[in-house]
Length: 272
Length: 342
Image 1 (cartoon, each protein chain N blue to C red):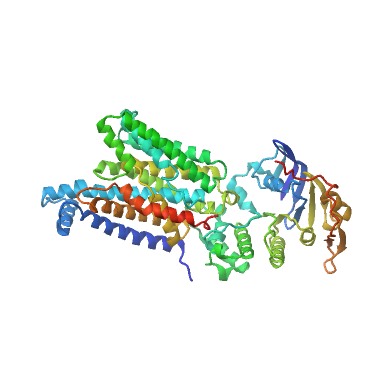
Image 2: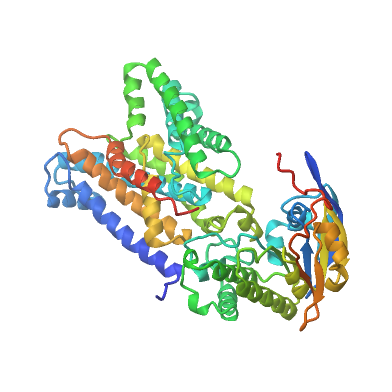
């Protein structure tokens, strides 16, 4: 569905990505993990077409991403940014309807089909009761739910999420990821998600891609990827790995005092 | 609370505000330094519209040649400025943005003054010379301000850039005045103060096409403009061609500002207060907000002009003074409230 082939990207003073390849197929959840400054954000910007790679190519549905018009692309690919929705005075229903924009014509009004999609999305996401509330009066968790509903109304085949759980409490984190995974499986949507939390990545992703200093350090199923050795090499900490008693996914336990900052170069220089 | 669909809100707002506007314009025509009764005024309008013989030529001249063009023109100018204000505020996500504060108006005023002073292009632009010069210089001012404010268009940087450009263009305008003869001087002076006095029908024909085309364009782009409130990145992810849309919207707003300034000078604060108040009352959806703010802008300026010409009879205040008396405290109040749009 979404394929990236040998992506390279440099900014004037540093090389950010160096030969990263990946592919996500329908119904699959691919997690991208890696320490700060390992190139996750840049990778996402290349995959959404916000920036162009210096070398390599991104293909959506077999066609180079740069051949897609902005509008065509938005019908196929939805993006949820880390900060979620800004605090706008629009109502929940109005924001969800904004997701229909790429499907709508030139005229300012919405069609019958758009109204239908918006209503069913509101019903599915349980936002029916909140439809007339203003987004700027919602809590962070509720707002993220509206953001997902907006993405659902967009009716995409690929969903890209940038650390969607950052500002959420654990209940909302799990709720959000459960929801995304079931949506992905039900509709066969290819999901690409950047996660900071390795344990959540192990629980929710079919495959994990681990970035280190702009290269793909490892790629595979969570149990293949998450080993103490790899985590030490990539993050420079010495963790303990265990199995989740119920799901048997690998889980990372952190130890105080086991951080080893010499194992890896500081990723970001603070002397700008 | 059950919310009405945007379409019903649009119809409701448009109808009620149009009705109110017609009423206020009617009242404004009946009110002025020449002492005419309501019946005289309306009988004259009636005979003119039906094409029958005027009752009294003098009354007809006052109504038809002096008051009516002036009232219609102030409505159109208010509409244009409020429409431009909605676009600037929505696009730049800045509640303090308006054509006056962004320096667009002073650019337009300088352009208009150049046109009057040099008469350049008058041979082939004819009656459009002044508005077209105003548009050119207003665009220059806008892009200078946006360029100065740098990437991201931070709220306070944008306002500061507007102040700088306003000061610079204002100085060039003063320079022009210093070089001009007495008659031109009077005309140019008028662009600094802002006024709709002594305006005639042909001024209305100058504004009207710009206003109609500008308003149509921005209303058709109301939905992308809504998406801009989520941020430019999100708008792009939803399929908006951000650069192109932004350019069309900015130029439409500048065009409307230039047309307004070309006939009335720099009238401040209309484009600031009206969109702001209407966003509160009519909601943030630009499909409703644009018509609602535009009509209210017309309403506000007709009212302001009526105050300007009657409050110190027989002398007249410049209309810009009246709008500033209302607008400047409002602007100050807005500066104090910071939580919105951050």
